[in-house]
Image (cartoon, rainbow, N blue to C red; front, side):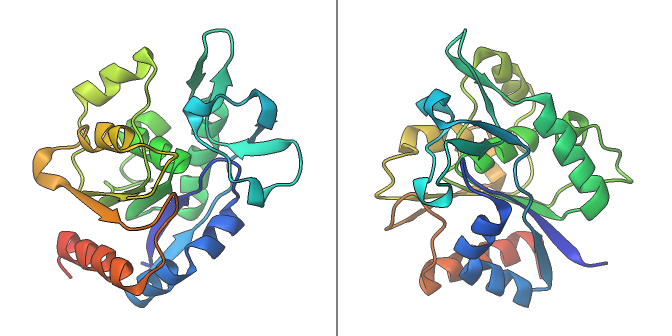
Amino acid sequence: MPKRILMLHGLAQTGEYFSSKTKNFRIELEKLGYSLYYPTAPNKYSAADLPEEIGSADSSTNESHEVTAWIEDDLINESYNLPQTTITFLHDYVIENGPFEGIIGFSQGAGVAGFLVTDFNKLLGLTKEEQPPLKFFMSFSGFRFRPDKYQEQYDNHPISIPSLHVRGDLDTITSSAKVDALYNSCNVENRTKMIHKGGHYVPTSRGVIKKMIDWLQAVNKY
C-alpha cells in the first residue's frame, strides 16, 4: 500500500500552490516512497472580512477579493470557528484518497491539522478501518486555536503522535508564542521544535530539509 501524506495549505492558498511551494521537500519525501495529497480548502470568504487572528493571507496566490480558508470568522463574537464544511470535506477527502500515514500543514493549515490530530478519527467521524492511527504530524508556523470552546479538546487530548514544529526565525506572521502554544499541546516525549533562518514559509534549503527528513526517518524507524 502506498504511503500517503495529507498536506493542508495556508490561508488564501490552494493545494496546487502549496504543492509548488513545497517542491523541494516533496521530492525528498517521494524518494522515501511517500505520495503527497494537496486538497484545496472548501470555503471562500471576503478578504476584507477576515480577522488577523485566523492567519495572514498570501496575497500572491489570489488576485480576487475572495480567499480560500479552512477556518471561518465569527464577526459577532470577534472570533473564529472550524466550520462543518471543513470537517465534512476532510472526512470525504480521507475516505476517497486515504488512508494517510501522516499530516503536514502550513500556517492556518497547520493550525487545523494540529487541532484535528488531538483525536483525528473522532473529530472527522472516521473508523479505524477507514483511517488507521496517524504516525506523525509536521507543523510549519502552526498555532493552537485560541477560542475558549476548543481548549478542552487540547487539554483532554494532548497530541500523542510524533510531532515536528517548524518556525522561521524571521516569521512576523505566526509568533513564537503561537507556535509554542501548539508545541505545548503535545506529549513531551514525542514533540520536537525546529527553527530555520527564514520567514513565514516552508523552508526550501537543502540543509533544513535534510534535518526534517532525518526527523521523519527517526520517528518512523526506517
